[in-house]
Length: 161
Image 1 (spheres, one colour):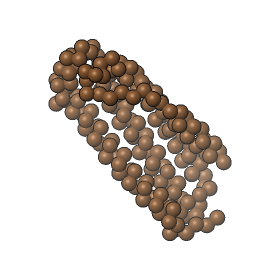
Image 2 (cartoon, one colour):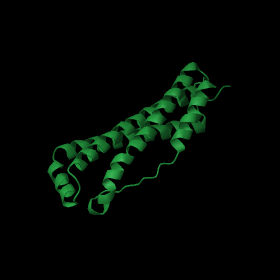
Image 3 (cartoon, helix red, strand yellow):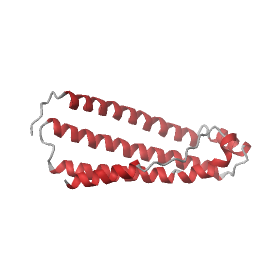
Image 4 (cartoon, one colour):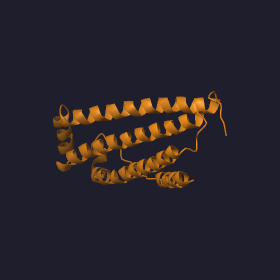
């Protein structure tokens, strides 16, 4: 099967992946800078808000850990998009069934599982923060759809095709 290098769908996909890569990189940098600020210049202010909310002092550490978990999850997401971009590039060159794409799909499946595991781990700080949500500038959402697991399963199966 040969594809034109000017296939509009592939060009749009590649453009969207470049945009998504930029957005994830931006988010990664911003969250990392935010985590650094929380550890340094905003530490006293956050500790004061935690104390004013009547929360235990250990909640600060939980919030910092959650921020670093978000950085890791964004890193996984970035790697996922890069792998997908490499698959799109191989399709544009006319070689979508190369063995490297099977490896890429398997890596993408593992990255998806990592992101899903990170989302599950975020439940722990969310549960710890939940009683203080009305008194802290934090939003907690405990919904975890199973779509990440389904995506990982599909990717693992496609990697074997």
